[in-house]
Picture 1 (cartoon, rainbow, N blue to C red):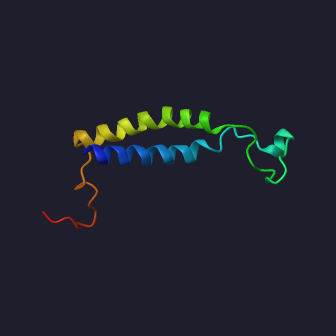
Picture 2 (picture 1 turned 135 degrees about the horizontal axis):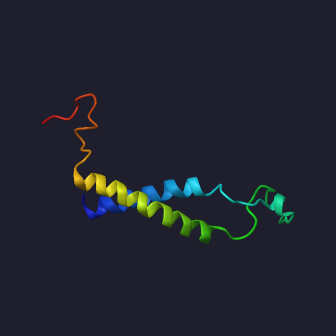
Length: 89
């Protein structure tokens, strides 16, 4: 695996984790009873993205390490995923 592949894999893993983390423990402006004029009531209340980014990093990094370890070990190869015999040898 090249360094570029590892970076792309990490960014993909990080963003997929972010989309899973975003809905948890989010308080809307309506729930906080503090609706800012011009925003929808369902918009998040307060600054939460910095904390969510840290939580995402703490979750995504071990997941990425496991994926990299599986790829680097050769435990699962591209030939194992070639279910329709499309890769020519």
